[in-house]
Length: 305
Image (cartoon, rainbow, N blue to C red; front, side, top):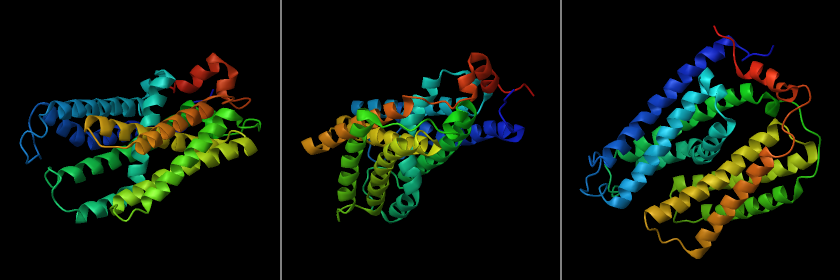
C-alpha cells in the first residue's frame, strides 16, 4: 500500500497552512475594512467608498478568502478528497498571479523604498500588500508542490511516450512567444520603474518557459520538467492578462487596442497551453493512478495516526 510517504512532512503541512493564512489575513482585513467603509490607510476621504472601488475590493477579498480555503485544503488530509478541479483551477490562476511577484519581490521592495509619495494611500499600505502577496505566494506554491507530489505522483516521475506536440500546443507556443517578445520590449522602456521592468522580464521569461515546455514535450515526452514549464508558463500568461483586463475595466483605464489584443493573445495562449498540459497521457504504467480506483484511494487517503 502506498501512503503519504513521510509522516513528518505530513504533520508539518498543516503548520505550513496556518503560517500561510497568517500572512494572508492583513491583506484580507484591509480589504474588509475598506468594503465596510472604514478607510484605514487612505488619507483621501471617499476614495474607497466609491461603488467601483467597493466592487473591486469585494472581488479581491473573495479571491483572498478562496486562497485561504485552498491552502487549508492543500495542507490537510481532507483536501485529498476535494475534486481535482477545485484545487487545480484556483492554484493555476494563483500561480500565475503570485509567482512573478515572488520572483520579483526584491526589486519590488527596493522600488517601494525609493518610491515617491502620492499614491493616495498611506506609506505602509503598498508594502503591506506586496509583502502579503509574497508571503502567500511562497506558502501556496510550497504547499501545492507537496500536495501534488502526493496526489499526482506520476506527474513528477517517469515519462509518457514521445509524440508530436500537436496543433493546439504549437498555437499556444506561438502566442506565448508573441507575449514574450512584447514583454521584453516593454521591459526596456526607460519610463518604467525598476519593479515594473523586473516584472516584465519575469513574465516574458515565464512565457518563454512555456515555449520550451512544448519543445521538451515533443522531444522527450511528458516529464516533471514539461509539467513545471507548462504549468508556470500557461498560468502566468493567463493570469497576468486576466488581471490587466480586470484592472482596466474596474478602474476605467485607458488601454489601447494593442494592449487589449496582447491581453487576448496571452489569455488564449495560456488556455491552450493548459489544455496541452492536462490532455493526453498523464499517468505512468504501474503508477497508482494507472492501477484503478481502489489503488487511487489508497494513495489519496493517508493512514490515520
